[in-house]
Length: 431
Image (cartoon, rainbow, N blue to C red; front, side):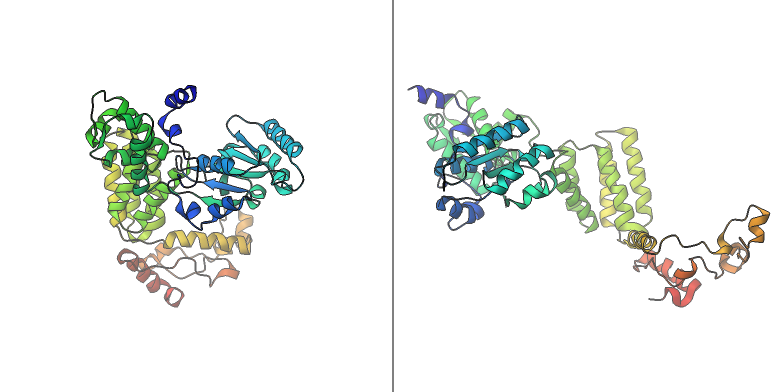
């Protein structure tokens, strides 16, 4: 009776936590029939690995299933509350408690990306010698957050956000099998808002379900989108400005502009706005995009991007969203050229390759008599003294006179610049 009361007091997400792989929902690429983790678990011997995926997709649950399945000591540490001393204490216990020929104890570290370098270093020797088998869980990209020596000793398995069918299966399981919910008359009339607000996160889905059901005193409980939205009244979007999704979404935004898709660019910008992104960050990224991806194909793009940034600074939300949207659509629909971007990178590479080449004497400044006597500025041709404000002369260092760095990409605007260069320089610019 006491155990039943304890279970009743637990949150729904904890009451429904799977205990076996057969109860586990999602991640079939890892735990489905014949999949790598299922084979490893069923064999009874596992190697160190790291589970990487967004919140609420089953990382901790999977570690607990392994703990229940394997007959080996299982230690748990949280990177939020544990220090180097805690790690060393667990490793010492694992060494003392292990018998000859027995499988290594398992050490599960939740949020391993929060471990400092020294904390991760303290794990290395034990993992390498097989004193413990490490299972780490992280929501952040391990290649950025986990030190390379530790990452090289672990397999990496990527968990995905739960799909619609997975979430619907979980909803029906909750309603029909949970000790509390199955006593209520619950009808799933609509599930769109539930799925949208959950964002592929099983824990969030169950928390929302529990909150909405508890707020409805009458029977039957009819779950529809309007009721879910009314009960929550909060921003459902998963957008951590310091997390990986932040970088994924800004990457999608810039690539949509580069790929000339205004609809996608507006969508990803809306995701950032709804997620609470700093509008100045969005504006700065569009200034960069105007230079990098549009460039000389439409020089006005940089002017508009700067104007949009200035508008954001002057008027703020919510009106600034209109200026950002105008700039976003303009950039996405503009012709594209990265010739200036490639040109400066080629120039930087040439400088690193050839070092400090001397400036040709005609191009040097000659503010003193000595400099003039040494030939500084001697022979320089002032372009404005010639027809068309141009005359041929050498501007590159002697050893680099034949090098080309800027290559026109022949967009309508850039074609005019290219033709002017061919007219001025002849074969040097012909391609």
